[in-house]
Every structure is written in structure tokens, then in C-alpha cells.
Length: 308
Ligand code: SF4
Ligand code: ZN
Image (cartoon, rainbow, N blue to C red; front, side):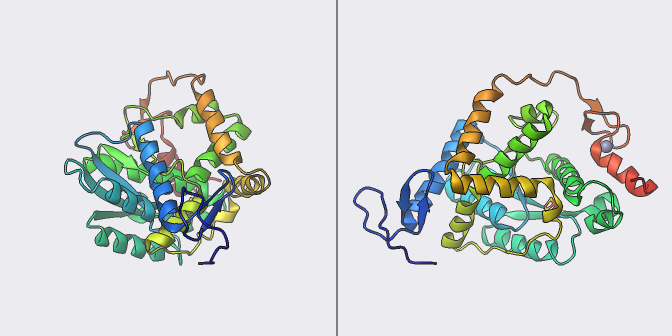
């Protein structure tokens, strides 16, 4: 880590700073940075009433920096809560040279933290890997399929495992990207769904929602959490990637953009229409779905029929 010339801005602290948060104007030393991240996570948990007495929380683990930090943070923050149970769920999408590496990391972290890890794969659940989907050359980017199928596996398995909450590692950047993507597409239904899901699904919680991506990475580094840095070979093909780059450029030129987009969305979300329509049951898998055949089963059929 680079030694900073700046001192920590907190009170009389004389430690050298390890980060300059341009959006807050603060320079923070290592202990104050850790405190700041943990404060943001606790605030998010309080704000959304994310965790209740007796919860069994299934943490969606990929073995990357975000989910590894999330599991570590939850275990640290709630170490004295004997009424809570933590389990973790990993999904192997079947992405050669990538997922097997990060999953090894997930196994190690879960073991170190004493959390049971349940692993599943696209191949076993659906009969094909994401690499096989990508090889079909469908019009949509692989991420579109990956997201739908991964959500499906996590939802289904969390329910089967008796989880009362699913914790995902979405950070501030992920959330703001999703908000902006939905603004660009004018997708009001998705924007409103971001606030919370229907009762048919295990509720999702996002404790890292208030922490910028770079700070999650720095937190993992200073807390000594082993992370894997291999990148998914498909990431650059997604629309999200373009939005991510654009947002990072904005944030660099106008610090605070990400937080202000998030605040703007939160204010606006009160006025978004509530989802009124009853959910249907997917004709194929029998699970709750907005259409007669759910998105995941649609993908399974496309793979079977080879439709583009
Ligand atoms: Fe899946 Fe896209 Fe993430 Fe790769 S980058 S794991 S394809 S969602
Ligand atoms: Zn289905």
C-alpha cells in the first residue's frame, strides 16, 4: 500500500491516511477507514431493518472481493448474536478459467469463518454451462442469462435450505449502475422492484449498498481477506460495463455523483407505483413468475431449441 503524505482527518488522529474520500473530503487512516466502512454497513442494516431476530441468512458467495468482504463483515458485526445463523450459497456458472478459481476462494473464506457453504452449478440445475450459452452466440450478452439463472438458483436453494434472508454483496457502484440502467431503459417496474421484492421470494438484503466498490476492495485488503482478482471473460460485453465506466468518469470529475444518484433514487422511489399484479406460477418449474413461463425456463427452452 502507498504511504500517504496526508494525516488522518479524524479528530486528533495523527496516523498516515490510506485513502482520500473525495466525496466526503476526508483523509482516513487504516483504523478509521475500517470504522467508516463498518459504520456504513451497520447504518444500511438499521435503515432497512435488514436483519431480524432468529434469521437464517444465506450469503450469496462468489469468492470475489465483495461477497468475501460481506461474509466477513456480517460475521464480525453479528458475532455476539447467537440467535442468527449464517450459511453461504455458491453457484458455479461454468465459466472456464474464472469461476473455479473464485469458488476455491469462497470455500476457503467460508471455512475460515466457520460458515457452511452449499455449492450448486448451472450444469446440474439446468443442464448446460454459461460457456455453452455464450457459444450459441445469442443476441444478448452472456451476463443477461447469467443473472437470471444465478438468481433462480439462489432463490430456489435459499428456500430449500430454510433461509429467511438472502444477503447479496451489491455495493454502491452496483446499485447505482442498476438504477441508471433502468433509467436509461425507462424500466419503471424494475426500478420499483429494487426497493424490495414480493412475498413469494426470500427477502434480499444488501448490506454493502452504501459502500463504494473501491472501498470494499480496500477493506478486503486491509482486513486481510483473501480475494481472487481474476475477471470474468464476459464482463466487458455487458451494457452494465459501459454504464460502469461512464459512472466512474463522472465520479472522478464530480465526486459524490454515485451517492447523489442513490439519494435521488431513494427520494423518487416513494412515488414509484407499487407492483399490483398477482404473480403467476411458471408452467414449467412451478415457481413464482411474472409470466406464464419464467425467465429461467425460457432460457432452458432456448438452449434446447437453439432459438436465437
Ligand atoms: Fe456472469 Fe456477467 Fe458476472 Fe460473468 S460478469 S459472472 S457473465 S454476470
Ligand atoms: Zn420456470
